[in-house]
Length: 171
Length: 236
Image (cartoon, rainbow over all chains, first blue to last red; front, side, top):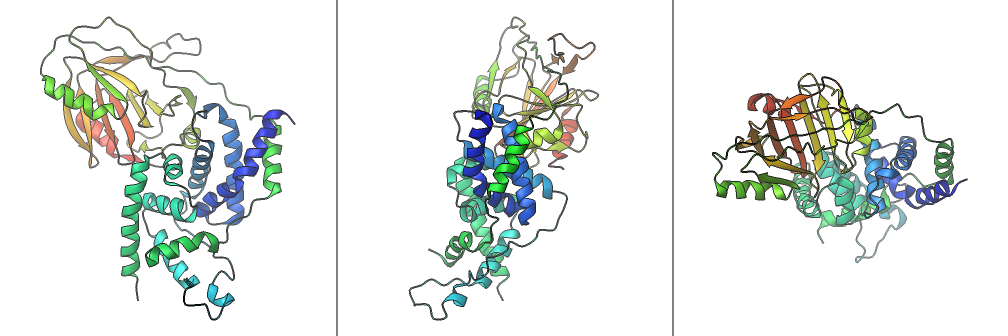
């Protein structure tokens, strides 16, 4: 194996976790997310010549993954729900949590995830980047190709919308 | 912290994410090692812009400054010329030719939009500044999209150019009319392709709130330019 392929292999190893998460957030299917991530890595390898050496690699790569995923789902209107891990509900693990423990139930999480899915594409992109992927404001800006200031203001507007959706759906 | 923030912060741990694997690493390696896919022969087309200027009329100094300031942030430098410049074609290279799909994949800074009014372009180019330019030969339209950057374009506005602020899909823009400049497609050897010279008199410049800048060159008038601009959609 040549040095180039070897170097790229370590990049795949380092970034595939986050790449898979981004792909999954868009395509909502594990094996589809794996296909998207694999194709995105191949495209990134081919596009390395276009990568600006003075800019960080990760957001550049993640943008390619996101575009690849978006291209796959554009034709289908329906969006599957994100799946929660089994047993992530603290109530099922600990029947009597201490009063200090902040308990969030899976039902509550599912409700917020549904509300996120009802946001516009651009609002969903900042909320999922900041909270679900835990990217910094700067990395979010670089991945989405918007200024950091826009990430801040858009996140704030998206949070307002999210609250409004949750209030609307409150039963 | 609000309840909503608490729930949001609990989500990364709770979602059943796909897991990284060595399988992925070896699949990518296998594809890379089989070598790059054969790429179709590419013409390196280029766009040469020639500005023609004559007398200064109709643009007051304050207005000039305001317009220049408005667009400086986008990396578009607008200079007002008072005399006919020596003609320097200053070849503005559009970039490497690509398919629409490649442009979508590689234009990583924004979502590429195509004006549905014009349909698929005759040529698509990816610039070194990550801009994407589309060319429609029949309609003599060149549309460039990019996220604002420092080295976008230098635009000389000749004295016969009329500049007016316009609204494009709710966003502010600028319409520059009556600035004839030609563009010529150059072949791989750098020679002009016969009969490829077109005149573009007018330019519509605008941005959306994602800071993506659009520059539409056309021989048509404002109404048609706006119709093209407002028909833009992110498509498959």
